[in-house]
Length: 367
Image 1 (cartoon, rainbow, N blue to C red):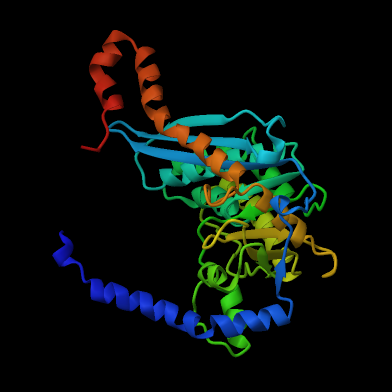
Image 2: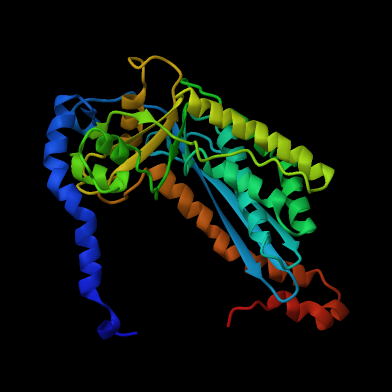
């Protein structure tokens, strides 16, 4: 394909169609939200005010599914990184895990489950006052539960082994879903498609054409501002009770359903909130924070949470909290793991095994 094959007029038309409702209404909407105090300001360390310093860490993970000739090699890794204000605070050691499984589409679910389990374990083992979960509060739940209903028995069993293993991910997930104002867990989604704010404003008479909240927030907010939080809607989450699988699948499935119902109940009770804020030093970047709060509207801790995350966000150089960026960089080391694992596996084989099926361990389907 060359540039002559690309219909730039069509692309530009799509862009204009998306932004037209925002351009038409953003100034009016901003004035209204400021007047209604639904756009709030927060303090910045560098502006002379000093929000309460807290030890901060973020957990992140990575996973690889390498399709070898002989089997699928699954590797998962989890890491925790300190924020800028807690650079000397101890963090749990990274965890790297691997397994070989017969070729099947469902092996990707095992990789997701392992990564989610490791992240949850490290997040709960962290002793920091504030901890960042990468993604939404739904993300680890979906990662844990999909594999137990996979088509292939080996995939289901591998997932169950992870759920029943030493990381105790369901116990960790229950901890994440237990509100703790003294040691909060904040969920930061880097890429989201939420329209909760957009739909709210549309119901109030300002038709924004279904624009996504993140896009809208970049236009509404100035640096040092955040949107008054609104309850998160996780109504799309359902329990997953199925009867056609073996007893151990049903047992674990029921445990996952119990955790799912806990999250659903928190949603029904308006215990999970979301907000967007624009860090100081940023013109276009906004960050989304989801958090638990079970107290009164007056006691909502959103401003403190925004200030903590803003403190760790080194815009314009890094467009996310430093701790989240660092954890992501440490997790990406996983890219080197498959080759190391294959070399070590080959080194433990007998000469006959190396000659017979050694090449099948080293070969994958990539050309």
